[in-house]
Image 1 (cartoon, helix red, strand yellow):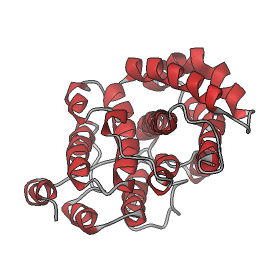
Image 2 (spheres, rainbow, N blue to C red; image 1 turned 60 degrees about the horizontal axis):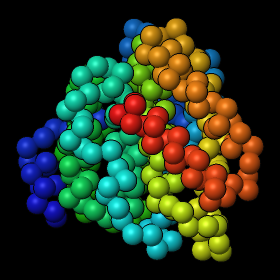
Image 3 (cartoon, helix red, strand yellow; image 1 turned 120 degrees about the vertical axis):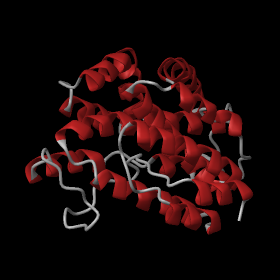
Amino acid sequence: MNRKLNLLISGLALSSFALFSCGPKPVENRDEEITKDTLKNAVVADVSLIRADIPSPTAISKNFNKAGYAYMKNLLNPASKGSSYSTKYQAAFGMGAFGADLGYIGSYNQNADAAEYLAQVSKLAQQLKIESAFDPAFIQKMGAAKGDSINDLLNEAFGKAERNLRSNDRMATAAIVICGGWIEGLHIAVEAIGSKPKDAKNADLYHDIYVHVYSFIHVQDLLKQYEKDPDCKKLIDELKPYNDMFNDYANAPNIGDKDLGKLKDALNVLRTHLL
């Protein structure tokens, strides 16, 4: 097992949250936390319908390795930036972004980088007062996992964390994390393809990007569910200048390399501002 992962296993009790599963698990799960303001079943159902239409950040990045694209760590949000996220808003958005980064890292079996990012996710989770999910047992499993099983473990852990956030207060934070993962996942994808025109080898990747962009309407819906929360309202306002662009591309299934160039430029500005 990678030395850095060994250090994490022996020295950290990691806890994290990043909302990767495509919709919450049923409420009967034993690991669901019950709180005073736990969401009513009707609210859970409404949010779950929206959540199910937002793809996991791992879904958009896991196929680049299979398509022969080289691993490029420079595409990711630097793990060192985690220490600068001092507010709940920054920590939540940063955690979502790091979750998408981990999906990309896991697809290339980069264990050393995974350890670095998991450590930052743990710190942000503590800052947000979110516990469990990324415990030492999970870290040990990650150290032995390869290929798709890495993303399966990530989805399982993040699904567990999501089930423990079903309260009115923390679901607003959840929405911000989801948006952070959505933006970072899209950024990684358009940067990974670069300026390569669509062809038979990468057509599926172009389609994955279209599906991801199409889900923007559901990201908006989720944020609007909690627009009375100051942080969600802030993020809604931050996204307003980009709404038309994302919605236009959501209606363009034949998205091409020129479209990716425009998305890349816009995401670089937005991502730099938010991260």
